[in-house]
Length: 165
Image (cartoon, rainbow, N blue to C red; front, side):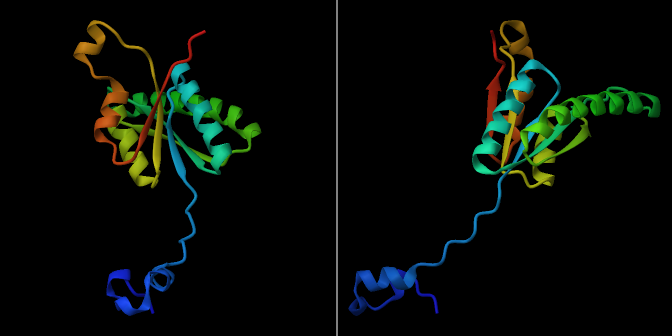
């Protein structure tokens, strides 16, 4: 029988109450990290960060490439899908020797919304994505995908700045 510490009569004593109220720790579920990947240098930096993290804590990765299909036609869909497949193949080539469990998919739509939706659908615990240093006019008129993901996400988000050499 399980007792809450506040419901145990005071005559038992605190040490015994603590022993009675402890539950066995639930086994920790392996973490699943979503990596948003578009093939840019910033995305490669984010992928490297995610792989290092997965190797350190046993997480698995789910890599998503989002194609923002601007024209709704079967021919354009095929072109966008092929572009996404090439990007995912590049990820797979780099991931296989790293010995990290991963899955990958191509999503369509607004990048930030598709990233957050995929994280929810895949039950990911964390989102990792890369960003570039946007300055000036570009940062004023468009918040960027990373900011929008931060705003929409229901899980923690890590943003990795593009490595500069």
